[in-house]
Image (tube, rainbow, N blue to C red; front, side):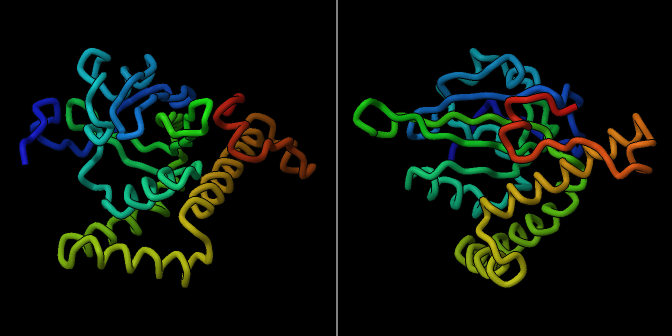
Length: 214
């Protein structure tokens, strides 16, 4: 396998600093080739548009991510299901950033899939702390026993311990932790809200991707 020269030569265990109120956006064709990226994508990934246009989106895949997560993602997209995933991405200098991605499917007038649009936002640290051990287990199984064994465990884990599919698990975990964080921010700004048990909290993913979060 030929190593992509655009990939970093070494991995650095350091999170890149970026404006986490912004949305990272990109478009790919049906095969995952990058067609478009916004300025935030360019800034956070540390790649410029000239470098990434025409490259596979997997170029920013971090080696800490288990392959089974992307298999589930692509299986759903190919079945024309919109999908969400929590992903650790790799920057041009070998650093990382965690995001939740909201994938939507682009279609032509006849309903044929022409590509995918991904919008990404930062996730609360509490989400990372809860999903990271699962990803580490999946990755270790993958390294020792292969991708098939990792997928078997992933399916069993979601069924036995979570009781949800991956998409629902991700959305519920992200929403729950984000609402907790927003509520705490409101209380920190106005302690009387805690005393009165008040505080207006927005719900769902749409408010996060299309509304004000922080």
